[in-house]
Length: 314
Image 1 (cartoon, one colour):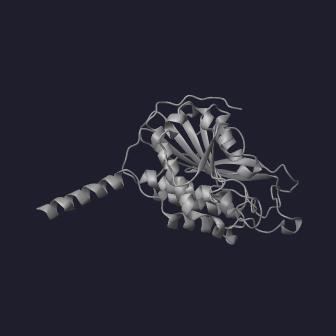
Image 2: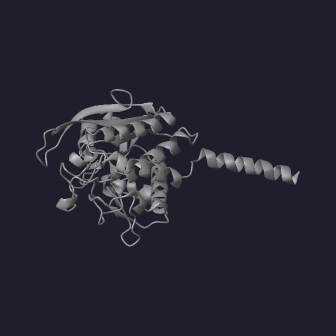
Image 3: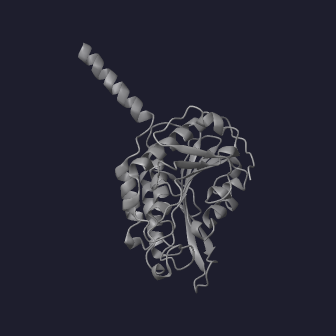
């Protein structure tokens, strides 16, 4: 009888664990980053065949996790992106945001985003490498295959946790961020869900090079009076620093400019930033897992709050 009771307790405990979230899996993070930052992807420049292959890869996982398409054409939202930093013959390029939705029938939606484009061969502006390395593949493992891997893992966790959350979740892989935040700007001007129903936005850009001395930057803490209570009891195995300002640096800026609270997760610059050495083998996968677990805690805590207010910080 005692053994039978232990068996039922074990089954109950397993059900609780499966219901309240799946663990972030490092093998998935590695798979996504090594695919997106492979030399075969030629740096995922906006308008390239290889960036379209990256879009197909993201779509494949959105379909696998049964996310509802929320683009203008299936998962895709197409727009034109213009290269402005340098003169090129193909200055106007086709770009696409990839958008999937978890519809919980809730009144408000949380946006989770990351850009999936990078610099290609570094020949349309943005490269910080030496002139001799312009024209070589800029793989962009940290910038921003790491963020896309996080996006796909969070989509998997929330799509398979058997919980109907109190908020809907909109997952967006933005294009043309490297050309000036163009994908997120386009979405906020042409939203595929009512923008007034967006509660807040979480952005991941360069979350793969955690340094314990510098810690993780979480930018946008001051954009809502709800964030202090959300972070109040949060603990993490990684050091993180909270910054109030919501404007600047990445795609959360486009949402901030629409009076939407934001958080931008970022592990900071490094010697390989926008250079050919930003490769998959340099990503800190254990720390990346911890960052995503922290994000899950933040998202879950935010769902306990009411509709967030917005505070203009800068």
